[in-house]
Image (cartoon, rainbow, N blue to C red; front, side, top):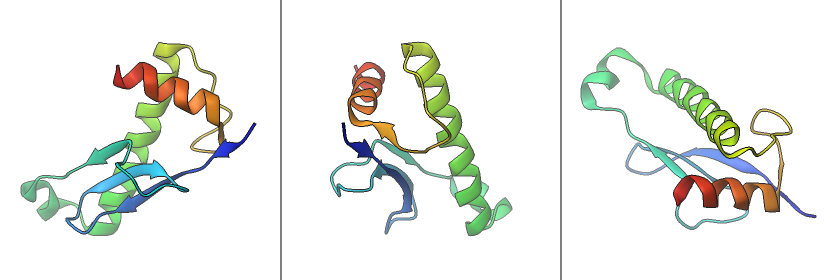
Length: 90
């Protein structure tokens, strides 16, 4: 089975997104910080906060759907990732 690596990127509009590293289509998750929040948290710190938010979201979704994770944002089996995304999105 293949592995799907996930990457966290900053989009041109300043949003932070989680997507499959081998694809450039629509991200799995987008995080947008309000302008007020940006005045309190610098750009580098926003990325760190987003990473923690995404990790917590993946762990919560996996727990809810019964998908076992192999580590923090480490490679997931392609079928497991598809199953997790399918269950969360639908």
